[in-house]
Amino acid sequence: MKILVIGSGGREHMIVKKLKKSDKVTNIYVAPGNGGIAAEATCIPIQDDAIEELVQFAVETKIDWTIVGPEIPLSKGIVNAFRSNNLRIFGPSKEAAIIEGSKDFAKAFMKQYNIPTAKYQTFTDVNEAIKYIKREGAPIVVKADGLAAGKGVVVAMTEAEAIEAVENMLLHNQFGESGNRVVVEEFLDGKEFSLFAFVDGENVYPMIPARDHKRAYDGDQGPNTGGMGSYSPVPDLNPDHVQFTIENILKPVAKGMVNEGRPYTGVLYGGLIVTKEGPKVIEFNARFGDPETQVVLPQLENDLIQVIEDVTNGKDPQLKWKEGFTIGTVVASKGYPGIYEKNVRLPDLAGSSDVYVVHAGTELLDDGGFVSTGGRVLLVGTTQDTPEKAYQKIEEYLQKFDKTDDFFYRKDIGKTMIKPTIASI
Picture 1 (cartoon, rainbow, N blue to C red):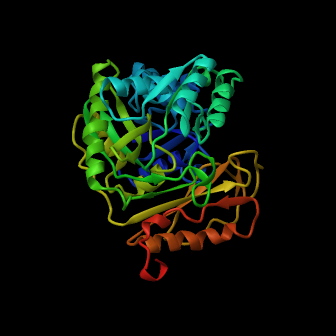
Picture 2 (spheres, one colour):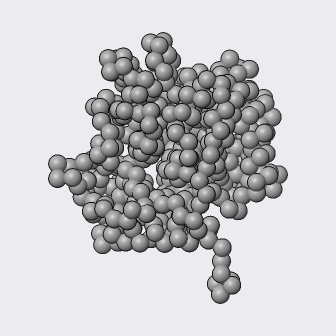
């Protein structure tokens, strides 16, 4: 089979690594890809939202399956365009991708179908939003309604922060059209986790849970980012809460989208939190999440293309998962998520066969080395039979980045999986 992967980040590189293990796959093309992907697949210089060009390439190259990584092409209708050209593509239609593309739609949908989430109101008028914030008090959460590259959420610990956030979005056009409408919702307290599922219509096949760390610095301090690392499974997560999430959140979403005339096909991502009342939804994404994909897919024993074919043919893919513990830590450019330098040469990435390196923002040089092109540069991951071993392998590999001030990484990703010893209590 010839496979086309759409996107240029770590999630897409992980998908490529998984596809390379399939006996069914002969050629992998990625549009536009990145440096690490270029070393493993054929990169095509077409942007991920250039839908007409991508359709033309898929037709001319006789692509058998296309897998969409990022949210923007999904919201722009790439799946609709491919299907209208009789091309097989895995991802939700434009009508279904609205579950990520509009926070207001998602919240109203959850309210209608009794899916547990934070109470909220939506505003286009800044004064009404401020009145609501003053009435509800802080902490409180302000979200841009539309897509904002993971940066459109402000967890405000004071009323002043929340008011500044709604003014930035509604008055100062911080996120353009994405922030013309804002969702203000209650702050939920608890431990977060992510749960993906392969979905087709009302059929839901859940994956294993993961936990993502969004804050830039150790101890969950600093500004929000696209994700600084992830681990899976999540030992402190009650299996009953996972089952509740499947039965009371993921399955009702799939059924509700069919009822709304927006049947969902693809990967549904639930960003969730365990509150005193049980699991609730923070957000939905209409695709594999990043960086959780980089720790979930390595544990999947099944052939990914076979899973996609089974799911889209109404057949249970019988998902099988490896034993063990997977940790993935992101290496970022100094200054991220603010201003950072690009084109900084990376240290030699060769090293332990026990770890894998997933590229997010890199370019491949003629001499086989790499330079940085993004805020999140790469992720270093490993699967081991104990969390301690996994953490140690990552720590050892990442020492090569300690010799430079150009990059930084969190040193505590996955540490919560390690049970405290008696001596440390």
